[in-house]
Length: 427
Ligand code: ADP
Ligand code: MG
Image 1 (cartoon, rainbow, N blue to C red):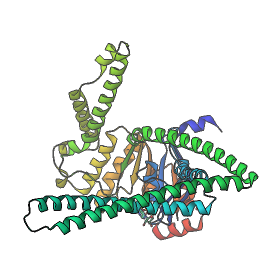
Image 2: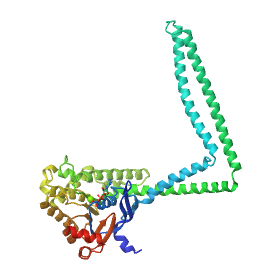
Image 3: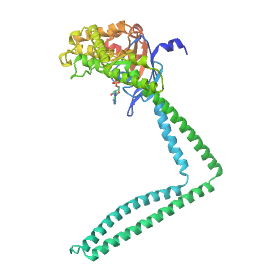
Image 4: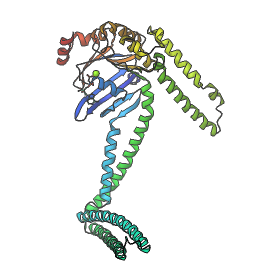
């Protein structure tokens, strides 16, 4: 493996699959996206382009394969498989331990379970009967006439019957338990020694397998949980339908995530420093360097202002989204993603919901970002834009990347038949 090229790879997928129910939408995507690349994704509607993007930042959990971002494995299908393996081994161990090999034992156990249910029911009934008997006894002693001596006797007789039932059930259960024990012992004795040895080995192996699977599963989940948040921050995502909060101003929309994440980070950092101080470390210098709450808020606002100026919308800072055009909304949505200072931007048909006269202003913003060196993946139907801005174009069809080439090559000399057909329809 060449380390230099590996180092540049920001996002890497291998055999990435995604199923919705029985429908396989992604069928095994191998894709490396390097720092600085501008990757356009084209392909027919329903081919899996959006699902692919959503799997990259784990908005959708893949069904299989791997997603590695910046060297950290965010998703590995083993995480899912290990869970299944764990459950399978658990069942196997249980079966081996409980002597699954004897049908008689199983039958006794079923009977024992039934007895248990009957016992519980009889105990409930006895409780009711006892309260009733008590009540009758009290009423009879007051000689109010509504309860006769016979009623009291009948209630008491009912209690006695139930108590006897319970005793019998208990005895039966105890007999069943010893039968099970005996049968198990017999099964063990009469079992073929070779088979027994086999089972013992199997059990030991299953236990070891279980311990290993558990360890791996836990390790994988630890890495994933720790890194997903971090890596989502590094991946800005812009959707077809802007998804702005209509009850927040433009600035509030843009600063919402940076402020809440900034405060969360501050809290975590403070907690860590406190821990170290309690261990006796001198943390005064580091503590003095921590920003305060107001600083975090002011910084987020300053960044928002700068970004708004950059996309020509400084005058919209305090308005609500409802007053904006579609093109303006989408430019705000892009700014909102940029405010987290991502390393890569994922665009899912960012201009598809716009009136034609607004497409240009949004593409212009994206083009400027590309020119500044932002790594990006953009699903688009704007072929001219893909030709002009992309360094690489992926043709996705039926859940697979069918062609992967620089735009001159892909558009000028398409190889795949489905791509040729697709291009003939849209160009
Ligand atoms: P594209 O973006 O290329 O148009 P999508 O990735 O949106 O395609 O969808 C690919 C296929 O997956 C479509 O057939 C779609 O109906 C299906 N699909 C997407 N999301 C879901 C979901 N959440 N549940 C079930 N099916 C889905
Ligand atoms: Mg789509």
